[in-house]
Amino acid sequence: MRGSKINIRVILKIIGLLLVLEGFFIITSIPFSIYYGSPTNLSFSLFNGKDDFWALVISGIFVSTIGLIVWLMTRRAKDSSLGKREGYVIVSLSWLVISLFGSIPFILSGSIPNFTNAFFETISGFTTTGASILNDIEALPKGILFWRSMTHWMGGMGIIVLTLAILPFLGIGGMQLFIAEVPGPTPDKIHPRITATAKRLWGIYVLLTAAETILLMTGGMDLFDAICHAFGTMATGGFSTQNASIANYSPYIQYVIILFMIFAGINFTLHYLALHGKLKTVWKNEELRYYLKLMGGVTIIIAASLILTHGLGIEKGFRDALFQVVSITTTTGFVTTNYLNWPFFLWMIIFILMFAGGCAGSTGGSIKMVRQLLLLKNSLLELKRLIHPHAIIPVRINGKPVSQDIISNILAFFLIYILIFSLGSVFMSFIGLEFESAVGSVAATLGNIGPAIGSVGPASNYADIPVVGKWFLSFLMLLGRLELFTILILLSPAFWKR
Image (cartoon, rainbow, N blue to C red; front, side, top):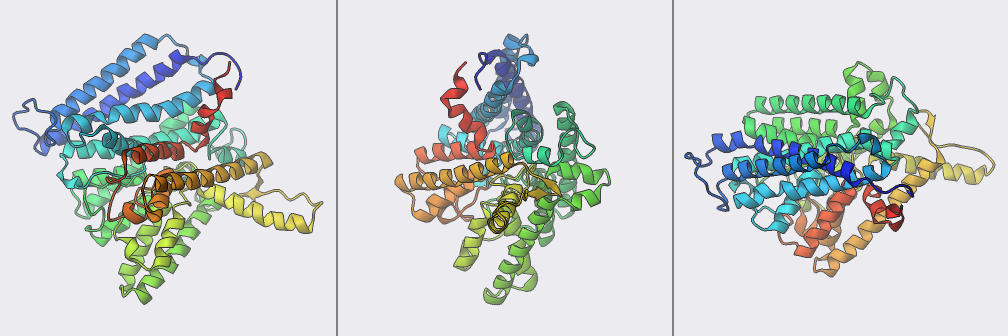
């Protein structure tokens, strides 16, 4: 990391462009504010908790203007000077800056007047965590609710572009596994250029979001709720427009959301290959099969228990089990039932699933399927190596050997993840949370899941967490969303040395 001084101007240039884009997306919420009854005379009124029109107008213009000023002041900075060090700073700083500015509509509208709560809700949206401090979601103006869901959608696409295009450039992140699996520019890769990759990913993301929106409307959901829930699904975020999340919707709608949560948890490279007819290549992907088998197996165990011992009908028991397993595994966080009312061993299974996560290159968070798969393979091979100490037996995925450097990276990631979870749980206990709530809140925010166990379970939220706890959990959301190392490397003194 030693080298020339970090180019602050090129960092600010990109941050400025992101703020301009964020301001534009804030403004897209205004039509919903007008249509759903923000003041008919459009009179100027702020901080009353009901008027979102002017809050969105002022926020959108302000954020875009700040971004434009920053960009104009730094526009001559050469993109060619963007190196790995600048990349780390941009990736980390982007999520923080857009969350700070994204909280302005909540504050100005009076929907969430407290800055800590507004920032918590916003960074929860952008990191696609879905942890909320709102006690009455349905009381919020529609424009604010749309912006709240939009933070998910923006963050989800940002993560896709980040993990498939940016992090490999920095040499970190789950997608280096994909690079190792398919070395060099081959037909199995989307495109070696970042900009081309981003465009293709945006297309897939928009297509899946539109398809889910149409299917939800077919099931009787209105356009507003369909868009918001599609945003939350494809981003694996979990913000709903209803206090009961998905519980009061029809089985058809629940199955549609289940299907698209599964899609959202799959590596978006595989979506690209599937759209180009390479279905055999997609199905041969070991991570995908592991992902589907894990969810299928756990669903059968939970469904059988609910049907046989909890008195639920076959279809209802299967649907409740499948929905919760898919939602938690993909780190979406939608719920249809309070799983804490299930037998203890069942909701402990749900808790363990919080460490699973979606596939690499998906919008899902947590540890990720490919890391678990390679850890399992490496552990089994260690047994063989003990029996045959002189044999060279590489870990393979999809028939290709995985370098020892990547295995070491995965082991380090897993160790650091568990260490942060453990220390975080101790800290949350220290500030007053009981054991279940402490471990649950840390697991759910570090894994970008949302609902957890204890007082932050599916029937409650994070409103009563102490202020210092909310800031700590906000940090964990960012840490987990950016694959740990992206943030931790900035805390290293060596990074800042010339």
